[in-house]
Image (tube, rainbow, N blue to C red; front, side, top):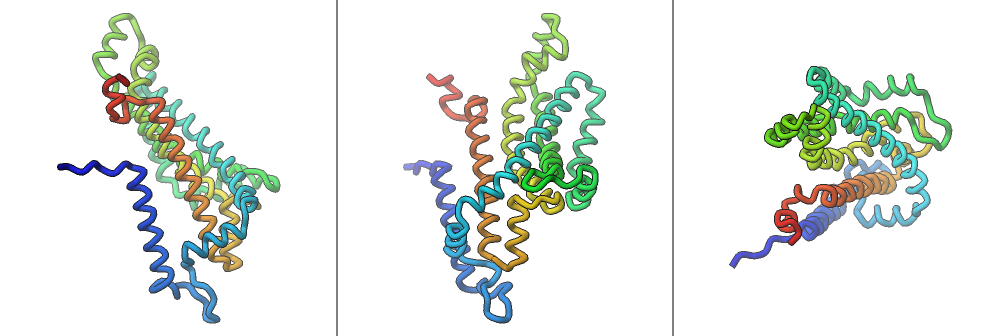
Length: 275
């Protein structure tokens, strides 16, 4: 008799628990002295309990004050980067001669080193006012999502069923009608998958942009300040907050994908039309 497979949420809980257990074991034993100062201070790898205590000591206000700025930067970059990527992908289908140029542009954006391009963007855009999001962080967030969304959307649009495209053509439709009636629907699963992957990438790009963006608030500056003052548990706590935000964004967009494109989930309900 075959055993029923574990649901994804159960596998995720087991994997997270195992990872926390290994982290705790390592931090309490053979990793305990890594990065520890000569005077016997705490090492560079705290236990999960120490991080939890630091999270409670810092309080919700500390993390929200910094996360709100980073989320604003990541959200703006996410919208701009994905919008430009989708517009370019749609334009390629309407004007096929643009495909080579669009593909090269996407590859160049992907190959640009963030460490090198960040200061250049900061010189162009300048520093933000105190407490406001950084334009540099927004730009790097947009740059982080552009390639994935553009390539995935273009591949999905070009994978539309040829018979359906022929039907539109027979009835006098043009490329714009093929795009509206067939290609966008066919590419929806690929586009939603790209948007889901782009959410954590936008957050990462925003945090990297804060290092050179001249902001005084944000998760990036919070980590730098904690590092400079040797508050190891706070560094880990801030990193944990970044991970939680990225995971939440990925999960929310995953739910949106299931609702918007149920035929792409492979569920029995989708295959049977919900009957």
